[in-house]
Image 1 (cartoon, rainbow, N blue to C red):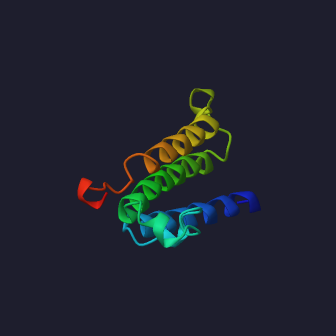
Image 2: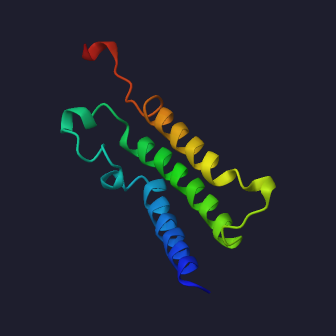
Image 3: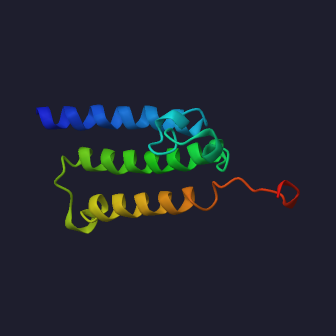
Length: 111
């Protein structure tokens, strides 16, 4: 095995570990942008749901990277679109979900 495949496998393992942490709802500090917000802005988000959405996206990205690594990045033409378009699609979907379903619902009594 050459060095590039080892790097890919190490990256897959790191992404899987991060995915598990996020899917358990415990990795809010790993989410860029969320961890830098003030407490007031963090209160607007359901942190556990946000962690699970980002963890799901990270899990899918790690699966895509695993498939690419198994094929040694020389995938058949039929599935070669997975890496660029799959990654782009997952990033867009996670961004949309993080800004829609992860918002904390406020009641009218708070206003």
